[in-house]
Every structure is written in C-alpha cells, then in structure tokens.
Image (cartoon, rainbow, N blue to C red; front, side, top):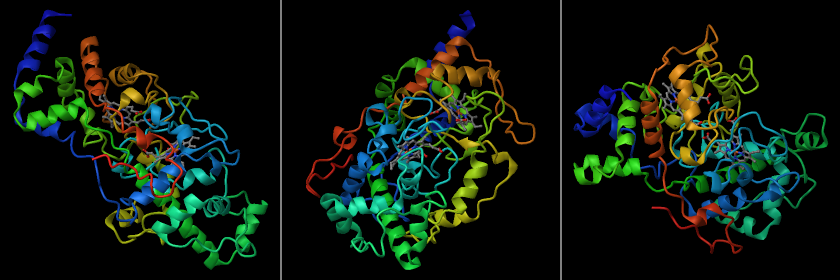
Length: 425
Ligand code: HEC
Ligand code: HEC
C-alpha cells in the first residue's frame, strides 16, 4: 500500500467528524419499530400477529401441502432462502428478499407492485409458482381449522357462511386459469358473496402483516456507534472498528452510495436502473417498476381500494397518482443494506454471490448493461483501491443485527390465543 494512503487512512480514523458527516451518519440510523399502517387496523394486534405467524409457517395452504412462506423466507437465513432464484411449486424469476425490517418499506416486491404489506401477502397464495392455490380453498382451510378460525373471528368477526356450498364452492378463485373449473365456479358466485370472500382474504393478509411488523432485530453495531456519536460518548465510539469507520465515511461521501442508500434501511425506498447484468445473459427482459406500477394500479387490494382500512390516506392517494416514465423500465427497488451477512446472494436475480462481487461491480461498472434511452446516469466507475473496498465491506457488515427472539422464527404452539408472541421492544 502506498505510504500516503496509510497516512491518510490514519488521519481519517483519528479526525473528529464534521457536522455534515454527523448529520449524514445519523440519517442512516433510527428507531425501526412501530411505523403504523393506517390501511391495516390490525397491524399492531397481538392475536392478529399470532394468527399471521401460524399462516406464515403453514404448508397446508399450498397445492402440494409442502410449501409455506417460510420455505422461501427461512428464519435461519434472515427470512430469505440463500439461493439466487427460489423454488416453490415452480422456479421463480426474481430473488427472494429478506423480511427483516420489511414493514419499513414504502413499496413491496422488487417492482413495488404492492403498496402495503398486507396486500403483498395475498399474492403467494394464488400464484402458480408459489402456493398454486385458490381463494376459496384458502378460506375453507381457515374455516375448517378450529384454531385458525377462532383467532380469525376474534380479530375480524365472523367468516362468511362457507358451509353453504351452494353459495361458496370449495375451490374457486379469480386468478385460476380461465376455462378452469375453479375460475368458472368463482364467476358463478354472486358479487356480494365474492366481495365477502375478498374481504376475508384481505384479512388474512392483514394478520400476516401484523406478524411481519414484528420482524425487527435488535440494533446493529453501527446503530450503537450512532447512539454514541449523538451522545458525544467518545469512549463508546472507539469500540467501532477503524476500517468500518473509514468505509462509512466513503459510503456517505466519495463513493456516492448515499444518493440511493440513505435512511434507516439504507434505501431511498424507490426504484433505479443500475444496469446489473441479467443472469440469463444478453439484454434485460424484466421491465421492473415500469410493469409494477401498472399491476399495482389494477389491483383491487391496493391501499386506495375498498379493502383498505384507510383508502383516503396519503399512502393510498399517492398510488393512484403514480406516473410511468420510460426511466422506470428495468428499475428495481433499492434494497435495504441491513443484515447483508445473512442474505447472500444479492440483487434482484441473486446475480452476485458476495458483497465483494457487488462492490467490484460498482467499482468498475465493467459488466453494466446500458439501455440507451432509459438509464440513470448517477453511477460512475469508482476506481477504489483494494483497501478502500475492504473498508466499505467492513462498514456494510456493521449494519448486521443480532438475531430475532427465537419465538418469532417458528410455528407457534397449538392453543388459540394462549401462545402470545413476545413483543420485541
Ligand atoms: C417460492 C418462494 C416464495 C414463497 C413460497 C413466498 N415468497 Fe415471498 N417472496 C419471494 C420472492 C421471489 C419475492 C420477490 C418477488 C418479486 O419481487 O417479484 C418475495 C417477496 C416477498 C415480500 C416483499 C419483500 C420486500 O422487501 O418487498 C414479502 C413481504 C413476502 N415475500 C412475504 C411472503 C409471505 C407472507 C409469503 C406466504 C404467504 C411468501 N412471501 C411466500 C419468494 C417467496
Ligand atoms: C443509483 C442508485 C444507487 C447507488 C448510487 C448505489 N446503489 Fe446499491 N443498489 C441500488 C439498487 C437499485 C440495487 C438493486 C439493483 C438490482 O437488484 O438490480 C442496489 C443493490 C445494492 C446491493 C445489494 C443488496 C441486496 O440485498 O441485494 C448492495 C450491497 C449495494 N447496492 C451497495 C451499494 C454501495 C456500497 C454503493 C456505493 C458504492 C451503492 N450501492 C450505490 C441503487 C443504488
């Protein structure tokens, strides 16, 4: 390493932080719990969370009785699956994101095609490559299971009278392939019965979201550093490693990461096209946010729709006014940079196996795929040295939290309501 770099690094580590640096650093940390969701009145209800946790670990909702949410969102792997692309009933085309701190996001999925956590949770049930089930089969399972039904009715009131099979078929749903028996059976239901079932279905999403709201791990060593910095506690600040501190200063300044990775999740919560090469080679085929907006605005379970508990909220209204411009073609949501130690591989198709591969991409942009008319121009090759890349990686690793309480990572016990989830505060 050149002598000047060594001297400079020592100076940086030793020098006090400027007010601008402190402000930027403080902006990357903060309380992560309890951002309310006005579109889901049950978001903080303990019985709803318990029901949601049961649903999350239940394989009985999938067509082959083998797939649950936890198949792909495995608590032992940061609620991701460790694979580039997931397999449920079939192989998916996008990488499974971690669910740690997920409630802090503004849009869900890589393309943001859900605007609430509860509406996101409805997708897997009816998607062919995830659970491959149908709406009435899902509701019937809750209806026929004494524990699920008791907890559901405690929070949301009575289920529709699903015993009456002349009105409520055992298998039916709007997303079944057209021409199939399930599709026709759904069409035969009266609009009022369809609507009652849609509402019950949306309530299952609200229960799952209440559980997901609790997936908030304890503060990371970076958060402890920020707390010490704000308290002017130099002794506690000294516990933070020097290489991570150098990486942090690079992150908020010369490496330009903060342009998109800011706020407590180190994400602007919005969408960018960074030109990461698709894993199938050639040009990208995934339209990302461009398609996501269209799907979101057509979804009856969106925040401004009839199943939302606050269709007039700012969150709801902003969905309806989203505009699609060509820059959004191939744009994906900026991921959180927390808990990267648990969530490899990275990017929307799991293209990069390690953080080092991600950093090499940003450093050279050698493999970047540029689509002429719709591409962001913020990214420039960084030309960082080996030591600087190691510093950046050390910083990113300090964003990893200790594990969640074990009770949140497993199927709850078998008595309704008794086995309450411990809160994580
Ligand atoms: C077959 C694997 C698989 C199963 C099963 C599965 N997921 Fe996912 N999940 C994914 C993938 C892949 C994505 C990203 C898809 C995309 O962006 O288009 C995702 C996205 C999500 C997101 C959005 C996260 C974010 O940061 O935006 C949440 C929340 C989520 N899943 C929860 C669930 C729940 C709840 C269930 C069960 C009802 C479930 N998942 C079942 C693979 C799976
Ligand atoms: C123009 C906005 C932008 C800038 C600047 C930017 N990123 Fe990203 N970052 C993104 C987006 C968008 C993705 C997801 C891209 C994808 O999956 O195709 C991403 C993905 C990542 C990931 C993978 C996370 C995961 O879980 O998959 C890491 C790590 C990362 N960025 C770190 C950095 C670092 C370090 C810098 C600075 C050198 C940086 N980013 C600069 C927008 C940006």
